[in-house]
Structures are given as structure tokens and as C-alpha cells.
Image (cartoon, rainbow, N blue to C red):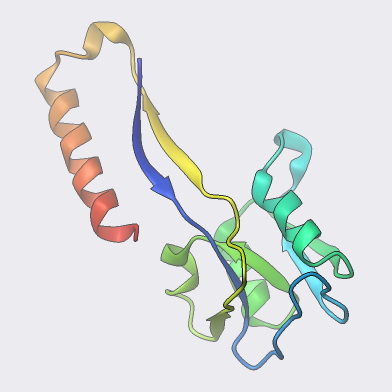
Length: 134
């Protein structure tokens, strides 16, 4: 069984002191992205299409690493606001289009769906996600 818990939105971030990248261009900027060897991620394709003149420079599957590289001025990163707003020295840029969002799912075996501990856990996770995800 599976259950959709929440939707995770993303923002585009640069170092606080960086100049504003031009949407649809990206000249003079680099991109911080995920490694795609494990699959397709829509936000990577969106970032490349939104800043086509900015070349990917670093690929990391760790959002904390991406945020710290972005803060150091390495490039533009797509981050969940829950990460981007927690790292001092980052600035979310206002763009005419937002990166694609992603749904967060929880899977469990159908035999467990009536287990009260699982239901309580789902309620706690659901409550926490509602509190931290805008």
C-alpha cells in the first residue's frame, strides 16, 4: 500500500552576495545539480532549461552539500525551502516559473494498514510535514 503524505515544493537559490541570474539565459553562472545515474529528476531538466547558458559544475545527491556549495558562490541550486531557508548566506530568487514539485509517499504492506502503531506514526509524520513544508 502507499499513501501520499505531502507535496514538496522547490525554490531556486544563489549565494546572498551573487548577482541575479537572468531566467532563460544564465550566462556567467554554473549549476549545482543531482547525479542522474539513479534516475530522472524533473527539477534538473527544469534548471538546465531555465538557465541554458549555465553549465552544470557539481553533481551531488545531498541537498545539504548543494546548499553549502551554493552559499559559497559555486552556482545556482534548486532546493526545498526547508533546506534553503535554514542555510545562512543563501538567497531565493524570484522567477517567472517555479521548479517542478514532488510528492512524498509512504509505502507499507497491506497487512499492516490496521496496525494502530503504524496509523499513529502516519499521523505524527503527517502533522510534522504540514508544519515544516509550506
